[in-house]
Amino acid sequence: MTHRATYFLLAIVSAAAFGGGALFGYRQGQAHLPAVAKPVDKPAAPLDGAMPVRISSQARANLALTAQPIKAVTYWRTIEVPGVVIDRPGVSDRGVIAPVTGVVTKVHSHPGEIVEPNAPLFSLRLTSESLHTSQRELFKAAREIEIARQQRQRIESLAQDGTLAKTRIIEIDNQIQRAEVNLDAYRQDLLARGLTTDQTQSIAKGQFVTEILVSAPNEKASPEPQQEHSSEEAGKAAPAPFKFEFQELEVALGQQAEAGQVLCHLADHRALMIEGRGFKEDMPLIQQAAKDGMAIELELEGPRGSNWPPAPATLRIHHLENSIDTQTRTFGFHLLLENQWQVYKQEGHTGLLWRFRPGDRVRLKVAVEKFEDVFVLPQAGVVREGSEAFVFRQNGDLFDRRPVHVLAEDRTSVVIANDGSLRPGSYIAQNAAASLNRVLKAQLASGQPTNVHVHADGTVHAAH
Image 1 (cartoon, helix red, strand yellow):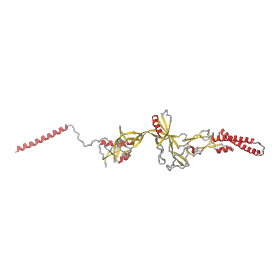
Image 2 (cartoon, one colour; image 1 turned 90 degrees about the vertical axis):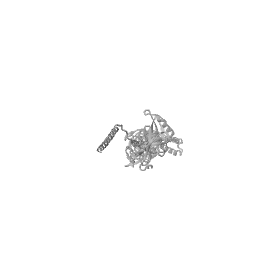
Image 3 (cartoon, rainbow, N blue to C red; image 1 turned 90 degrees about the horizontal axis):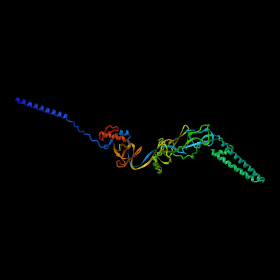
Image 4 (cartoon, one colour; image 1 turned 180 degrees about the horizontal axis):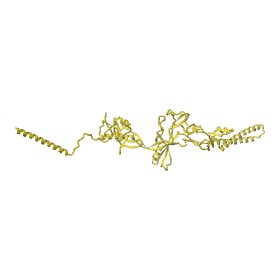
């Protein structure tokens, strides 16, 4: 019995030793086998653009993201041409000249001041010998007429008594007619030199003119006022009449001014022009626009605010220059621009504010090609990747990226074909398309589902 128990115990120990050795050998063999990757439950990356973009409300606010419905429209492709506001020749600037030779004894207005039409500008002491001679001859002719008429009256009284022949009366009448012709000639000469009718009548009576006033032009000689607005109430006509602006003084006090010399320049900027400069290759397009009378879009510089009415959005070409600049190889074309102004008063001084002034820069957009039944988006609403162009369509809180066909574009707009990729009425992001595209790439790379918030910086947070 003792031997059997011993044998049985030895058998159990041997079996245990054999099993342990076999398990050790199996583990050693597995350790030398090549490693096999363990499958991971990770969803495959979706196709590009198939996953919509979800961004937080904070991110939308940071991006100032806006979406608006699109509609099919007719669009004109334009070319941009630089322009500048210039004086309208013969209208905008008024040169005031000295009608006669004289010494400037008083300057009534100065640069920067506002001048009423017909207001005095300069006082001139006459130094012209020919003007003094014309006054003397005018007075002499008037006195000869007066003497001849008195003589005729005496002769007529004597002729009634039959003591003098009527032939003498005829001679005196001829003398009076010759004197009247000379009187009219000298009067017209003085009027042409700038003297008034009242002054010529005074000269005929012996009151010679030694000093004259040079006045501003009459308002009737200026173009009809356009777009006058009060600084207090926009859009309502200002009660004050139009006034010139004293722009530049050309003489000094005590200086002798010759007849015809410019004394000052007055500004009348109610009527201006826009000069556009186009290259020679643009000439056929601009000529066609002028021929068809097409409206030219404007982007004008100038003050903006509620106290100014809307600036003109379009104008038509008035005329084209007939020559090309030899240095810049450009040609000019011109558009008429009606200015707007405001009158203000401060400490007894009256000032004039112009909305547009010579030297202001302008962008001119000339229509050259027509596209019908297309969508138009801002440049910031389209993102490009190589030859592909994409927009983002809003779908609730999500934004889907959609490929589009770009027909044309300019500095501000992109023209998209209405080929079925977008439907009219769809809400399309008008800006931040590049930021949305970066968010989409971050979301595709992470493989996160759409029930998460992906911020513009690529960080991902669970949706609530």
